Length: 115
Image 1 (cartoon, helix red, strand yellow):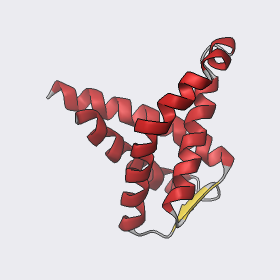
Image 2 (cartoon, helix red, strand yellow):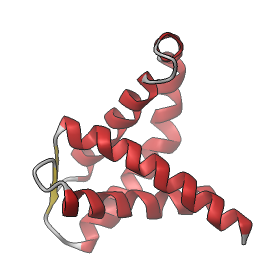
Image 3 (cartoon, one colour):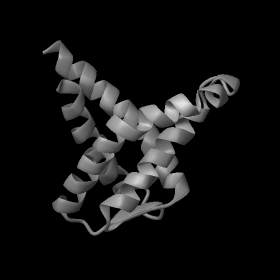
């Protein structure tokens, strides 16, 4: 449960941060409803789709010493933006978003577990 909560917060915070610092790559209609829907959709994709994609692309990830997992994270982030609606994400924004969301969710998950 802590991990899901960390993912929800990290995904919403990632969208807000990227729209603020990379407005040409990530933009949304600046409503909290959009952020909440995006965070929920991306969390569901992280729970269901991302493990399947990582399993399928495991050989490529081994060949690239794990760098291909960044592509998978970016693809899931991009798909989340497309499914949520009201959000425009470029491929570069999705790649950076996948990295930032991963860092934020692991940091929040660790901080919440220690309490």
